[in-house]
Length: 161
Image (cartoon, rainbow, N blue to C red; front, side, top):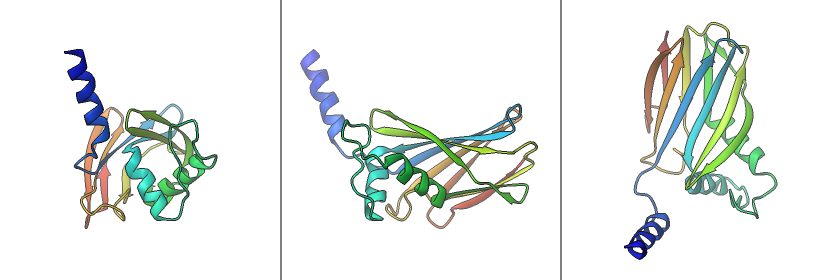
C-alpha cells in the first residue's frame, strides 16, 4: 500500500497541471495603513513566463536558485499587477516569497493606505504565456471580502467598500 501511495505521489508531482490559475489575496491592514498582497502561482508557470521574457533559469526553491530571482519576480509582479486606491496608483514593495510544493507564494506590501473606499485592480499575471490563464482576486477591507475573476479579455475590475 505504501509503495502505491509513493508511486501515486511521484506521478502527481511529475505530471504538468492541466489548468492555469493564480490566487491573489489583498488585505487592508488598518493599523499599519497598508495593503498586504499575497499571490499564489504555480512555480513552473512563473518560471516559464519569466524565461519567455528573457530571464535566465531561476531554479526556484533549489540550492541553485539564481541570485536575482527575487528581483526578477518583483519586477514581473510590478508589471503585471496594478492597484489603484481611491484613484491613486500604488507602488508596492516586494517582501519575499515562499515555496509550497509546486506553488510559490509572493508577498508585496503597499504602504500609505488609510481609507480604501474604491480599489481598482489590473491583474495580467501569466496571461501573455497561457491563453486559458485565470486569476482570482480576493480583497478584504474592514472584514468585508469581495472577489474578482480575471481572464483573457477581462484583466481589470473594481470593488467599492
